[in-house]
Image (cartoon, rainbow, N blue to C red; front, side, top):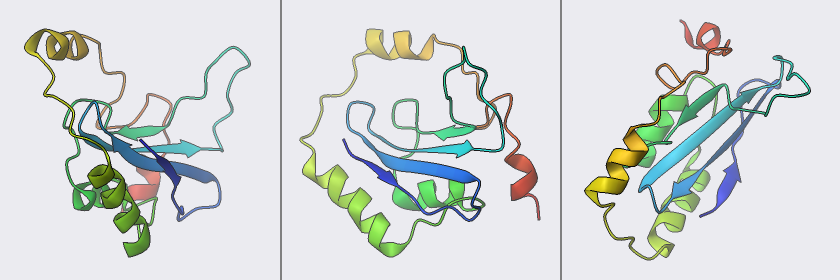
Length: 124
């Protein structure tokens, strides 16, 4: 699995994208640097897509999810596809493990963390 820095449309954002072989999903994490992190907090993304099994199965879908904030150009799209193709096939997740993964609460609402201010950037 590789993580690639992706060019953001705003200077106060940082984004990483990649392919997660065990989960069989592309992922994107967008960090809004305008939101201060408390000293005891961990730096969680303000937007996170692809944290569940088979959540984002194509680069086109990933592009659509982050289009308001991130530019996944053809070169980066090709790198993402090459990373997926280079990984050996992982066996499907068995039902027990899938149920365990699904049992965790999802703190993100449509990919947004509770502190996210990114929705305001995505509105027309």
